[in-house]
Length: 386
Image (cartoon, rainbow, N blue to C red; front, side, top):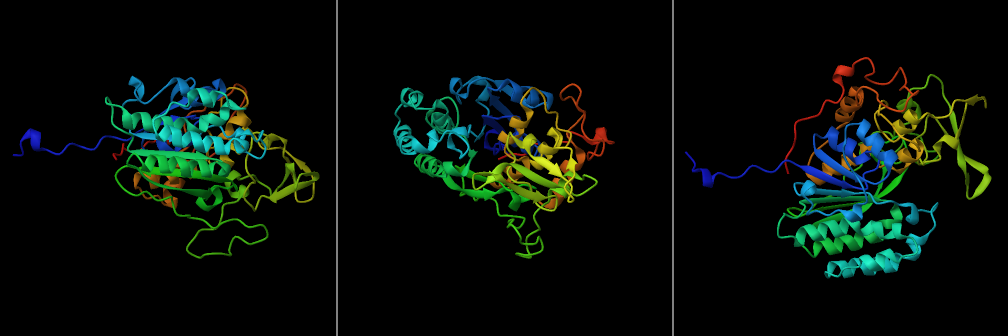
């Protein structure tokens, strides 16, 4: 018999704390993977959706919390998708103007300096929120009453990649190994073209960003073209299962010209889903007006389950702000050393999310996957360990 003190300890179950958790994009992915997660989110509407979905939720300002708080001490994975408005083309541009300043803040934080007052003085204080995950990670490393996070996963718009690279260097300085880069959502089975800057860091081994499973979308290039080892990109028509083909006419003008509206057919992926998706017109191939996307359909284009219980107000904005769960699942799986295949996604999406408890007066489409099998919903794999 092995003496009790000589027995190797079991690896700790994975538990994620998700900063700026939104309505649950990463958390849905974590649930699919059988991983525990608690999210911090200040927006009351997003919190209403999270609670309706049964996701662990702390409503509040991320800046008021830290890794040494009792409720987050057991978390061994840190995830974060800070607000991106000041970094996007559609935003104010304060994030781009402050980029050099933000990069200097990263170096100062890595050196142990407190830069909270300087961050509050930025033209748009939301710009500084992009550094909150670094604060959490460094505080956990330097704490004497908790272990560092074993894994860090961050996502943002492509303009934030220089910040992620700087954050990666700071994390490498305290013992992490890092990989970061830009991922295209359609290359991971999302029926939408969207790009995200992703960072993965681990303390115990060199992480790698996930490898594409699907071909990249290029306008005018058929789905069948490209690398044969990859699956064709997914279409809006296949994702939504509307009975007839359609054309989406974007609310945004091509090249800044409001008269040159972008168009995509149902045999293509959606353009980036934003909070203004309800303004996009849908027409038949002959030009007849069709019903615009419902919130459930917009969520499905983001790869949320079709019966996900969207709640509160500004649902379209909640949907547009979220990371697509399917992309998040690939990123988390890569960060945790797990392999996923197409059958995994077919299974979790067919199971649905659970009995609908969304906004009064709204119901998910009758044809939603798993709608006639509620007993199969919310099936969660067994917890996994690091």
